[in-house]
Structure formats: structure tokens, C-alpha cells
Amino acid sequence: MTENSNSNSNSGNSGNSGTNDTEDTNDAKSGVGRLYGVGLGPGDPSLMTVRAVRVIAEADVVAYHSARHGRSIARSIAAEHLRADHIEEPLVYPVTTGTTDHPGGYQGAMDEFYAESAARLAAHLDAGRTVAVLAEGDPLFYGSYMHMHKRLADRYPTEVIPGVTSVSAAAARLGAPLVEGEEVLTVLPGTLPEEELTARLAAADSAVVMKLGRTFPAVRRAIERAGRLADARYVERATMSGERTGALADTDPESVPYFSVAVLPSRVDAGPSPSAAAPPVGEVREVGEVDEVRAVGEVGEVGEVRAVGEASVGEGDEASVGEVGEVVVVGTGPAGPLWLTPETRGALAAAQDLVGYTTYLDRVPVRPGQRRHGSDNKVESERAEFALDLARQGRRVAVVSGGDPGVFAMATAVLEVASAAPYLEVPVRVLPGVTAANAAAARAGAPLGHDYAVVSLSDRLKPWEVIAERLHAAASADLVLALYNPGSGSRTWQVGKARELLLEHRAPDTPVVVARDVGGAGERVRIVRLADLDPAEVDMRTILIVGSSQTVTVRRGGSQGGGEEIVWTPRRYPEGGSAENRSTEARSAEARPAAARPAENRPAESGSPEK
Image (cartoon, rainbow, N blue to C red; front, side, top):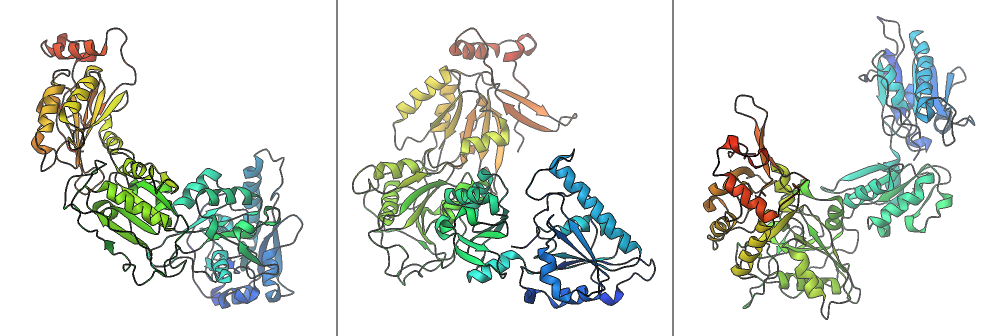
């Protein structure tokens, strides 16, 4: 917690640091001195490295930062190693927590200060003196030494002596592992905006928030909003006089100094170990077959039908019977981790149990101690009931959907089951995800730039007559259409019928985005004419976006016929006439020569480039 506070300026030049021994202190050829950035560790002088002690002892000049009161934490740490004949260069900040009348404001004052400090040190180096700049913690970890390094290291022989950081010291004093296995440690300055802190903490495995003090109330709120307050720890002045540790939730905001950190330790084995009844780490629990399946969501149509068995919690599991847990329904987006929102990442990391269609569970990284319950894609109601039963027994459960969980996916299934006894008291949250329609639209351009409708072509949960009626209505209104679940191995005719129906309202040249496996290894995005849409090229991993009479295709780049073709729908709709008339005009325009058509009805060149 003793890294220096002022590390905002990043102007100046940077250079390479050397690693020569102190016996090569002076450059024999140039006669200039050598610059050292010396890490002192977190505060206890006994935690200084042997190398740091040696460099300080042999330096001609010892420089250190201090506030205007003149006291320097860095100097106090290294005091026993300073000689009477050391030339000391206190670098006194012009401003720390106060205000400044500098014309350039705070940043201008700091830039000027760093430039003047570098000039003072350069004078010593030009005279052939060795300069050791002391830095609490590690010199290049939120330390002010880095500003000297950027301004001087390209001009003078330089070496950086690493030090123990306050992050390592805090974990050591807590006796809590920071990260284990494939966990990722996130280090954040508390000066970030509260919303940004919340988002990053929600997505983090383990985290350390530095630079508290006046930022502590906002940091505490961010940790609480991210759902991590219960396991957050507080460490103040680690390894120094006045050290204090404890639960962050119990810490008085008025008592928090700048040199303190918030720690969210490793989640691995954070609670009692799972019982022998729990599956090994990473094992996917398959579910038993059932005689009757009641499908609820349109998640997919491949695989053997299985349903979720009875939920049970072992004696050694962290959750205890009688305590109600929670069900969080999350969407993974159209593909892997790149599509996850920070909020969803946090929910997945915090869950004790993951429940979902096995294909979607495979998108979620395996975490030690987390149980995974995989099932077929046609047992949404049973899957929802299983998740709610786990939550009734005190478990934190994430139900995993593809795309957005509220769009033809698991949110409806969970809420339907949760709306009846005995699940009315189980907390349920739904977190949004990137929908297949939005992902496909972004890949193709902006076909959803105006009003649009979303329709599933699957007739498993509604009769085809209803689908046809809705397609007629949306097409008559001249809406862009995003068509989900267009076909599968057992449904091969719906795309052809939909094309025929839409051609009653749309011109043959209407652009259609055919997007398959967006975000996946087999991604393929094409733009074709509605009349040329081939049902044989459409399956359950495909989504179709059918343009309106106003949707435009344009080829950008490539003067010799290359480049890429994009599609977009204008935000404005022409005045005068009904949407049905617009559709009729678009179809009639096909019968006239292209040069005679109004510009707004003239189709752009079309093709089928892969995206």
C-alpha cells in the first residue's frame, strides 16, 4: 500500500533499463552516472531486497518523493541504509489532495514538477554521480519513479530494482490466496468512475482495488453492486506500523487512508469443500431420460431428449438446506467469451452450479469447485425446475442460455416455473446477452437501423398458420424481419414457404442477410437476393435478416470490383403512402428498367461475398 500516489502524467520518453552490477556504476566511456529505480517493498524495511540495499549503500545521490510537509515514506523505509555523506534530493509534490492555481491545472502542475525533478537528477547524472530514486512497493507499479524513468532512461544507463508490491503484501497479511489455477487477477485504481469499477469487478475472478482514502465510499458501493461485498477484505498499511485488516463491509469510511487496498481473494475453495457426492471438477452432470417432455424455449433442436433429475446438496456443500439461494439466467451471446457482458461474467464466476444445454455450458470456462449440470435442448421446463430446486436448497445457480436469455431461450422457461408454488420465494434474476439478430446485423452492417420484427420459424410450439399470419403482417407493414430457428434436420420446408410469402410483399432484389455461426469458428455471413435465398443453405445455426423496401446494399472499397458489400436500413422512412403501398411500389419497380426507377427504389448491386 505504499506505492506513490502521483502517477497520472505519462509524458516524456521511455527507455530500456539495464541490469549491470553496481560496480559498473559510471559509464566508463561517457563519464555519466547510472540511474537506479529502487523498489523498497510495502513498508517493512526487512522486506527490502538485498539488491536494493546494496544499490542504496553505493549510490552518490538518493532521491525520494514527499508531500509538502516534507515527510517521505520512502525515505523512512530506507533510513537505516542512508549514509551521512549521501546527497539527498527530496522531490516535493506541488499538490497532492488539494487544489492548484497552476494555469494547466493539476495535470499541468504535475507535468512541470516531473520535468523539473528529472532536470535536477540529470544534473547529477551528467556530473558522473550514481542516482538511486527510492520507490515504495515496486518502481513500475503505480509508482512515481516511472515518470523519472520515462524522461531519463533513454539518456542514461538505467536499472530498475523490483520490489514487493502492496498487492502481494496485502494477500500475505490476510493469509488468503489471490489467484489459483486459471483464475485471473484484476488490479484497479479506486479513482476509476464507480460504474467502471462495478463493471470490472463484476467480471473479475480475484481483484485488488488500490488508492482508497476518499474513494472508499464509491469503491464499497461498486463492490456491493458487483455482488462481492461478502467476501471483500480490507488491508491498511500492510507490514507497516498501524497495519489494520478486516472485512471491508465493516470498515468505517472515515477511517480509511490512501495507503489501503480492497482485496477480493481467490474463489477457489473459498468455502467448505464439496462433498463426495459432488462430481469432480469440470464434470458435466447428465440427466436422466423422461417419458414426457414439455418444451418451453426455442433453444435448438439437436440431440437426445434428456431431463433434469432431482436436485440434491451434499452434506459437505457450502449451501445449507433451509437457506434460499438464487437463480440467475444469463446469456452467453452467439459464441464464446468475447461476447459475454461483465455482469454475466461475474454471475458465472459467482455461481456454485451451472445448469444448461450442454452446448452452451461448453462455452463457459471450467472453475474449480463449480458443479455443471448439462442436459438436452428440449427439456427447458425440467431444466428450470432443477435449477430452482437447487436454489431452494441454498445454492447460487446460473442457468446458461445462448444469445439473450429472454429471446426464444431460458428466461421464459425459468420464470414460468418460478411463478408457481413451491418456487414463488426463490429469487430470480435475468441478465441480458448479445442476441443472434444483433450480432448478425453488426457483421453485415446495419440492417436493423429502422423498425423491425423478430419471428421464430419453428412450428414446434405454435402452428405454422400463426407464423404465416405474423409474417404477412410484418411484411405488409414493411418491417425488416429477423427470422430465428429457420430450419433443422427435421424441418426443411419453412424457409421456402417463408420466402414465397415474403415475395408477395417484397421485391425479388430485397437484400437478405444469411448469417451462420456468428462469432464461431465456422462463421459465414452473406448477402443474397430474397428471390435467390436457398433453403438448403439454412440450418438451426443460421439466422436470416430480410430487408424492408428501404434497405440498401452498397459495395465499399475495391475500385476494380472487390471490396465488401454492406447492408443498412435508413433511420428515416419516406412520407406519404402506406407501408403496404411502399412494398407494392418496390415490387412494381422491378418491372421497369433500372435507369427509370426512383433512386430510393433502385436496388444496389447484389452478390454473396463472405464476411
